[in-house]
Length: 380
Image 1: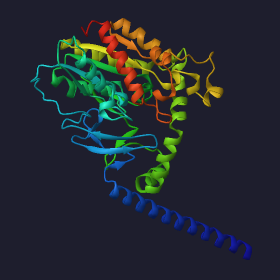
Image 2: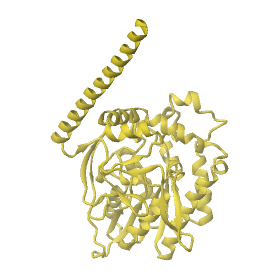
Image 3: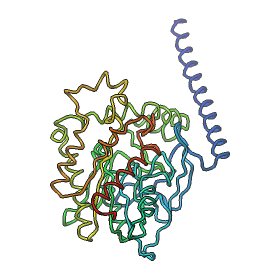
Image 4: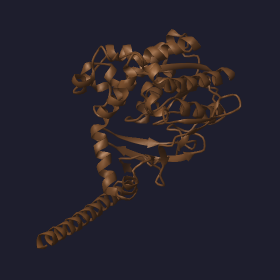
C-alpha cells in the first residue's frame, strides 16, 4: 500500500515539476521575444504580413515594412500601397514605358535577397542599359511567397491587368505541384477560376500564414505557446531542405503525371487560363522554368542521395519534360533554366538550408532571361 502511495506521490510530483518547468521556460521565451522585438522592432524571423483574401486564401499587406532575419540571410521586405514588393507604380502609364509584369512565387517575390537583387529588378536594369533599347522598360512585381499557379492567375487578373502591361514573364516552380494539391476551386459560368479554398491553411490574427492542425491538443499549444512555436520554427529551418526534397521525389518519377493526374491537371488548367486571359487582352506571355537545387548536381542530394536517388526510379528532368510538352501544345514561349544552371553549377547558387536562389542565382537567371528575350527578338 505504501509502495503504491509512493508511486502516486512520485507521479504527481513529476507532473507538477514538468508543468512548473514548462511555465518557466515559456516565461523566459516570452521575455526573450519581447526584449528582442523591442530592441529590433522590425527585425523578425517570421512573416506577419498576410491578410485574408476573398478569393486567393491570403494577400500581402500594403505599405508593410520589416527586416527578415534567418540563419542564412537578413533582408528588407517592403510593400507598396497595392501590396506589391515593389516601388509605387501609377495605374496610368504616364511615362509611356514598356511595362512587364513579373509573375510567380517566392523566387519572383525575391525570398532571401533584397529587392534590387531580384531577377526582375536586374532584368529591368539590363533592358534599360541596352544601348539599342527602343523603350523605357518598367518591371512590376506580382510575385508572392507560397503562391501557386492558380493564385498567380487570380492575382494577375485582380491586380496586374490594371497596370496595362505589354508583357508578362512568368516564373514556374514545379514543386508548387505539392501546394496546389490542397486547393479547391469555385469557377464561374465559363469555367474560369473564381475563388480558391484551402482547408489546410489559415491566416492568424497576427498576420501569419499557418497550417491547420488536426490534433486539437497540439493546435491549442501552438496557438498559445511562444516556446513551442519557437522550437518548431527552429526545427523546421534545420530540417527544411531534407523535408522538401523527400516530398518532391514523387514528381521525379516517370509516371508522376499519371499517378498525380488531378494535380497536374489543376496546374495546366491554371496556366492555360493565364494564357487565355493575356491573349484576350493582347498581352505577350513568356514563361521560364525554375529548377530545384537537387536537379543540378548529386552534391545537392547528399546525404539523401545514398538513400533515395536511384537512377532507375528517378529522373531529374521529369517535371520540365511534362511542362515543355504542355507549353508546346499551347504554343507558349518558354525557357528552361535547368540546363544553364547545371552547366554553371556551384553550391552558392542556392542557400545551403533554404531552397531559394542567392543573389548569384538571381543574376544567372536574369542573364539567361535577358538572352532569351533577345533571341525572341524582343530586345533589339
